[in-house]
Structure formats: structure tokens, C-alpha cells
Length: 206
Image (cartoon, rainbow, N blue to C red; front, top):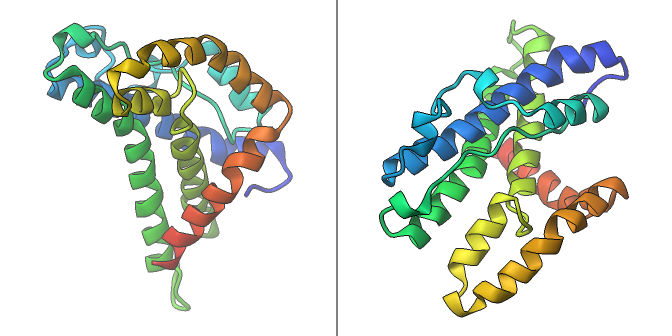
């Protein structure tokens, strides 16, 4: 996705990743507000200012992954304030991945629109757009994994009957460790990679 030069990766990947994570977290906050919870807004999280969302460890991972991956601070949500909490939590959790897929789709459409024989668009613009497609699809697919604390775990919990709550609580206790092991041993990309590639190719083919 990027050139071999780490500086080039930083110049392209870092701003795209920070922007994508910021929009992701803002979308969670905005969705929670729309469903009746003002917690994120009151804490200054319903903003597109990256400083309100960046997480220290997430930034370290950004650097370690050569600016292709990372995470931001989770948006706080008080379910007691939500109208129809189970339905609301599904949409609030899905809002982040949906925002990333939207960015990826728009970036892919821009590439197709500008990529003509008569195009005068600088190659760097195409690199930014292509990077935005890959990073945002990866963020969306990763966050939809049904393991706590990812968005997919909230979606799965609320789609299942309430009687599965105890089972989900048990899984949630070991899920962060399992997720960490998948990341460390490189198994995670084996799982989500084909899905990411399929979606990227799908968007490019429109």
C-alpha cells in the first residue's frame, strides 16, 4: 500500500489514519447524542478535533505499524440515557465502521473519477485517496470483529436474545487477551485480510 520509505508512509498514512479514527469516534458520539445520550458531547467528544480522540497507546501502535493501523479513545456511552438501549447500542456501535466504509467508498469514487488519460491530478493525491480506501476498509472490518471491546461485540450482544448475556460476559472477559494474541502472532490479518481485499476491490469496481 505504501512505499518502502518510512517518511513517505508517515506523510501519507499518519494524517489519513488520524482523520479516519477521528471521524470514527465522532460518529459514535453523534449517534449516541441522536439516541438521547449527551455523555460524549458533555465530555467534548462530539468534535472533529483529533486531540479529543487520540489514545497514547493507539499512537504508539500507529508508529509501530508504520502508520497503517491504530486506535483512538473509546467514546463513553451511558445506556441509561438511551431510548430503546438495545437498538440504540447497535446503531451507535455500527456508526463508526459505517463512517469508515463511507470514507473508503468516496475515496474510491474519487480515484475512479480522477483517473483518466487527461487527468492532471498529482500522483500524491491518488496515493492519499488509495491509502484512505485501504485504511478505512481495514478499520471498519477490524472493528466489526465480535470480540470485546470492538464495536462488533456490542452489535452481536444486542442481536442475540438477552438470555445469552451471561455467555457474552464470559467471552468478554477473555476477548481482549484473545484479540491481543491474534494481533501479536499475525493471525488477525489472515482472518480479516480476504474480507478487506474483497471490499476494496468491490469499491474500486463500481
